[in-house]
View (spheres, rainbow, N blue to C red):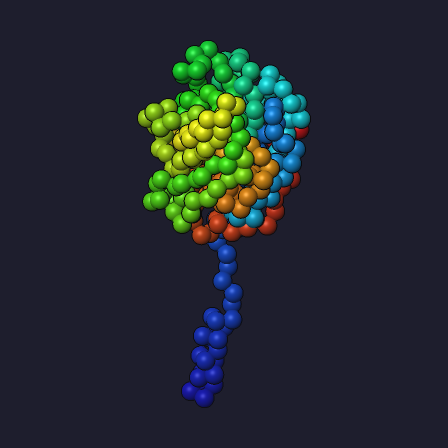
Length: 284
């Protein structure tokens, strides 16, 4: 009995070692993200590709895109024509530029899923959208973004400094200098009580009359909207060179993961599939 039992027992640890570890469901399942993009003043046709591919190369995120080719400020992205426009998504990245969409009922439709807790990322001109009554002091959209941003200066390089180095979003990231970019007029005093600054930008430029001007503003922050939704926001991202910059994409990827509560090693891995098969309701 002993002569046959020993070889059988010896196989037990060998089988245990040979069996590959099964990946966890959380690590395999991608975050379902919707990118709403289009409108005035930017190369959104190219930037939709830079954003989706760039973030998915850094995080387990798969995308549906609603790209609006209209280049005006009065056109509403078609995705918002549906009441359940955000159904099925874990997070929305707002990169639209629609300052003159001012119908409060429409804006409330855009905000409804976020008010219910849907996380969001808002970048660049997304800060200057939906200027309803109350602008520039207070609008429903500013309550969502967490900062009342109303304009910007000329394009010039911006020196980025991460001011909250303990934040999980910026931890390990180092400061950098952008190409020519727009510095939005986001003084710390414009932040709402629900928002926390993460980074500042410093820009020096020469006016038409030859004077040197230096300005400094908040360029990245987080916000808690309606007591539920986690929002990551940055005003950077005007030019393609910035949107495609690895340091910018690192910041966006980490901010997105933070917003959905999955900023961890399991999700800081490239996605197997960049684009989702399903299209958003109402989107193009």
